[in-house]
Image 1 (tube, one colour):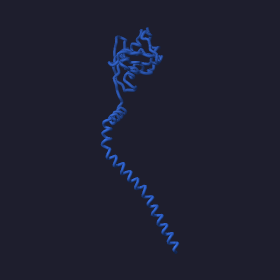
Image 2 (cartoon, helix red, strand yellow; image 1 turned 120 degrees about the horizontal axis):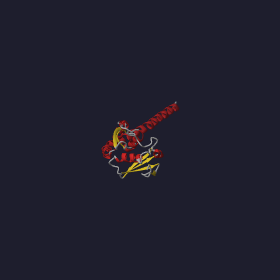
Image 3 (tube, one colour; image 1 turned 30 degrees about the vertical axis):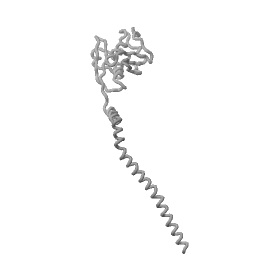
Image 4 (spheres, one colour; image 1 turned 135 degrees about the vertical axis):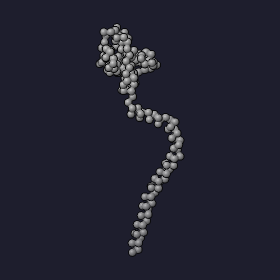
Length: 190
């Protein structure tokens, strides 16, 4: 019988050791949570003021508004037929800039009012806008080689139409047209 009592006592000790091993990680986890909450409460005002001063929240809000509201812009296209005319129209923003959209409109999507007045784009409809960059008042327009197929019945008009359309923007002083990366001579169509 004595042996039985010893076995019983040994089992009792095992249960206590198991309970201690189970409780210890819970206590450590609880202390870590309290430590993190304490640090958060202590540093929250500093972090909040740093985030507000950085302007990140306004930037995120602006980005979200831009995604929700389609941007619209006024484009103006120059036509030389029947006297120089400029047609302005409003469209949704599709490209990276309104100048990009303006040239795309000149090539593919010019206003119906211009068509009614007999104005047409002299730029070949097969032309693709490869790129458009503005630097220090100079606008570089990179067009595909199909631009060279543009109307030649009126000297220089396709070049002039692109140039004068872009010069309608007050920030542009000069226009350089490139054909697939190579500068196009302004007198090419002459």
